[in-house]
Length: 385
Image (cartoon, rainbow, N blue to C red; front, side, top):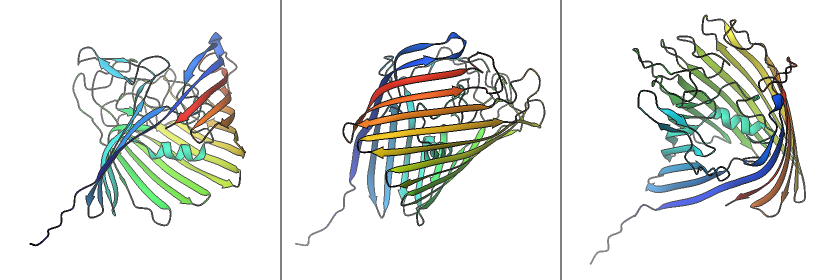
C-alpha cells in the first residue's frame, strides 16, 4: 500500500503589548496647571494581537491588531467613535483607540498590507528620537515639534502624519540592510452638498479626504540605523478639512502638503546618539503661495549605566510660514528640551522619570496655551509582555 504525503499550513497567533502609567505635574501657560495620573509617559500603551499562516511556497498571510487601552480614564479601547445621525455624526474621544491594524501577504517579493497603517514618517521620527513619541519628544499637535498636522479636527480618515485608514502599502525585501516602502491612500473628491468635511471640531459632514503617498527608505547595518521619508497629501477640486495650517477650515483646491524627514541613530558601546531633520511645505487656501514653510531638527542621546538609562533631547523648529490675514498664525518657532531616566527592574519592567520644557512659540511672550511655555515633570512604571 503506497503512502501519500500531505502538507498542512501552520499558523500562530501571539498576544504582546506594553503598559505605561504614571503621575505628572504640569506647569502650563494661561493658568492651565494640572497634576494627576496619566498614561503613555515613557512609551505608548498597546495590546497587540498578531498572527501568521504559512501558505507554502514561501508565502505567508499576516495580520496585526494594535489596541491602545485607556486604563487611567476607564474608557477601555473605544477611541474615536461616531455617534448620532449619519449626516453629521458626533465624535466621542478617549485615551483608548485603535493603532495600526492590517491584513497582508508576504513572501520573497516583500510584503503587501491593507488597513490602518503606520507611516514611514512615523518610523523616521522614531529612528531619530531618543524619547520615541512619548513625553520629552515633542511629538504631538499642541506645541508639537513634528509638523502642525493633526487629527484634532474633523478628518477622522487621516491621523496625519502618524497613520492612515483606507491604506495599502508595499514593502520590499531587505537588500543588504536597505528596505523601501510605499503607502497609498486614494483621494475622495466628490461634488455636491454634504460632501465636504465640516471644519467644526467633533463633526464629520462628509467623506472627502486628501490622497496620501508616503515613501520610506530604511537602512540598518550593525550599530547604524538611518531612515528617510517623504509624505505628500494632495487635495482635490473640493475643499477638505485642514491638516496643517492652524485656524484654516479647508485647504486650497488642488493644493498639496509635503513632509520630508531624514533621521539616524548610532550606538557606540553604552551610548546612542540620535538626530533628525525635517521640512514642511503647504499652499494657502486663497492662493498657491507658500503658507507652511518649516525647517526643524532634533538631537538626542542615551547612555546606559548598568540598569539605568539616561536620556536627553533638544528640538528646534524654525517656522518661516506666511498665511493670509485671518487664516492663521505666522512664524511659530518652537523649542523643546527633554530629560529622562529609566531604572530597569527586569527585562520587562522599568521605573521611569521625565522632565519636559516646551515653548510653543518662541516669537511670542504671550502666556497662552498656543504660545506659552509648559513644563512637565512625571514619574511612572512601564511593563512589556
